[in-house]
Length: 251
Image (cartoon, rainbow, N blue to C red; front, side, top):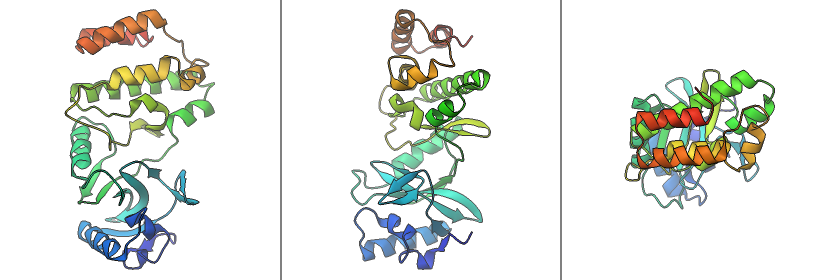
């Protein structure tokens, strides 16, 4: 764990710059470091699939950046609110993540403050990358497609609209236990949930990813799929959900 920087030294490190990013202000950064001490975060580190200013981190969005951290002796993902974010706190995202957790969805939230969410660090490739690397494993692909569709359905039932599932290939991480949905910063309880319809469209209807998936998965009839999706959107009950499953060859 030599790449982890103790919190008391973090602000002088490259990793520590992401605690107050993109505009670093020492007073703000020190206040944020104080928040992390209160949460019980012990250290932070670089590393991950995304590059910001040539530094590797776990993730980057409109609201926050995600870096590695140590919390209560375990490695976690630490989401840090951007200084230029249009949201003033992380409260709503943490609330939505916890609601998703109750349905068995998303990375587990451990604790949060105004500017940070400490959550489970998921290990594995993005779903889109995983499919490309395993295009010959048709049974596994089918299983993971089924899991992702099931997650989308759970979100619909819980009335949580994820908001970003039109870009499905980068919003699921394929862990050893299967796909897990991530990044709830655009989520809402105030919109009509469209998780299943967005997920199905992203997988099967005229997207670049659909062309890749078609190499390993039987594509549905476009006309029939659009018809059942319209029914589901109008009335997302269990019967119409089963019709969607049939249309995408998951029964």
